[in-house]
Length: 163
Image (cartoon, rainbow, N blue to C red):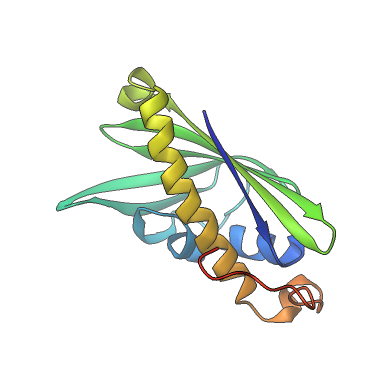
């Protein structure tokens, strides 16, 4: 199981604005491109988005299904990409003062990924999560202040380069 966290210098409402917009999926999720909804119900439970997953020169179709949607705290997804199987991706969104703590938990569920799940795979997921959470923070923190009720970024907060 790969668990990683990221502190985002915005209120949870701004994070939810990004998470609930399936057109922004490719902006913060590492791997998928060309994403779009299969219906108009995202992010309701059972809603699905489709995308292409590029692995080097290989391009595979993928889809992600919402399994749990409980704003403002939980979003759980099941990402499918054949022939690899599927993975559970859980996002726990917590207010942290004037900021938001995002906890990402991912593990393989079905198929090949589930069969070969081990420490080495978790280490690779940690690298992916590090990049993905940084991308999520960049997208959220780059939004206009109205996205989190007008508060914007946290005054006086300075993020060191490379964080």
